[in-house]
Image 1 (cartoon, rainbow, N blue to C red):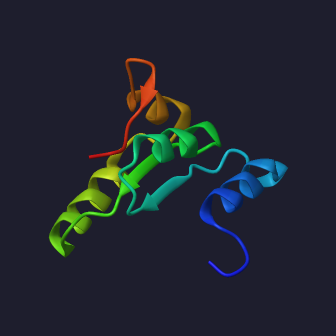
Image 2 (cartoon, rainbow, N blue to C red):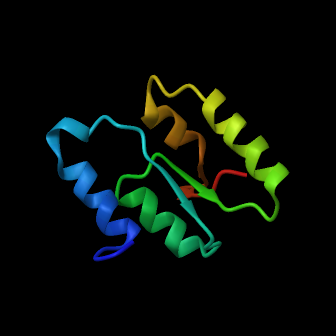
Length: 89
């Protein structure tokens, strides 16, 4: 994105009183656990790694939309494994 990266945008959204309850799904190509953990720590509710093909992308988006987003923190906690956050698969 011009002028800022996704994590900066994430912080900006979380710092905006009107948008604080907005569920945030990070969509990234990184698979580095440290990057995934950082995104969750900065306020992401879900970290989604870009899939290798179109069909996987469509199926993943459908699955993400079926999650219970009425309480984003519950979605987030589903992806905390042994005290570390993991990506949506």
